[in-house]
Length: 64
Image (tube, rainbow, N blue to C red; front, top):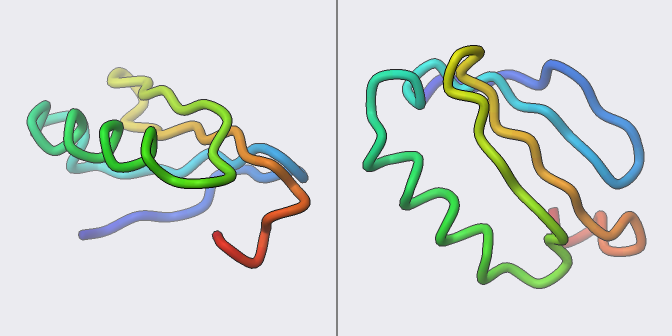
């Protein structure tokens, strides 16, 4: 799967994932997986931009 980092700051990262735009089931699976990961505070998808925005605990960057 193709993805690229569009922007990152400690505690937040925005990934461009073109497949999200056309595969809503993939998006749901990713969101469910992220929800169950330690250190992840939030996640959302911007379908118009095919972006995945993840908020995380910067103290746990080794997990990421």
